Structures are given as C-alpha cells and as structure tokens.
Image 1 (cartoon, helix red, strand yellow):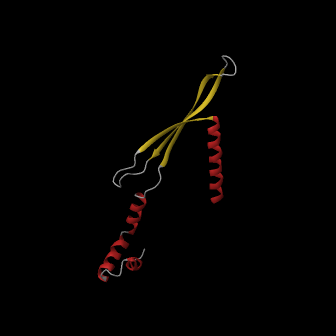
Image 2: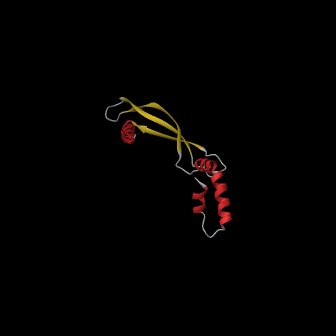
Image 3: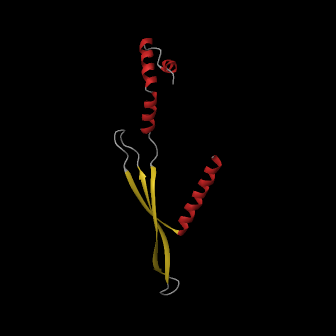
Length: 123
C-alpha cells in the first residue's frame, strides 16, 4: 500500500505533517503488519490429526437364545487446535474422542463425500 493511500485514510482532523509521518511509517512496515495480522487472526478451531480404530463388541442377541453377535464400533480421536485465548499464548491442543456405530459411520462418509463433491466443483 502506498503512503498516499494511507495518508488519505488518516482522518483529516489530524495535522497533515503527522498524517504524512504516520503514512510513511505504516507503509514501511506494511509487510510485517500483514504477517502479524494473519498470524493473530481469530479463527475456528483447526483439525490437526485424526486417529481411529475399529472395536468389535460381542453381544448376546435377544432374539435367539445365547446366540452371540459381533457388533463393530468405530472409536475416533480428533486432535484439535483450540482458539487462542491471548495473542501472546500459543493455542492449546485438545483431544476429542467419540464412538460411532456402522449406521453413523455411513452417514458421516456420505456427508464427507458431498463435501468433497462441492469442493471439486469450486476448483
């Protein structure tokens, strides 16, 4: 950004010499200001890692006496970078664990497929 553009943004109620000085200083440090602004921008939590496993639970079926049924369940752990609480403090990492049965996993996969399709149409 050019000093003239910055000068025009400074309120005209401020002395012109001070406006010129501010414009010159800000213009000279614009790259650093942009980088700091991007680094300190508040945003949604960010997914950093996903880990998962499949557990099989043996259950007795109520419909047939003593018949054992294997029920698969998915255990998912998301590692999420939380929102920063202060500019000088790095964001904290948080683990979120949850369990899904086959039906819920199918629903999640269908929705992820829809997201992927939408992203592909944007590219």
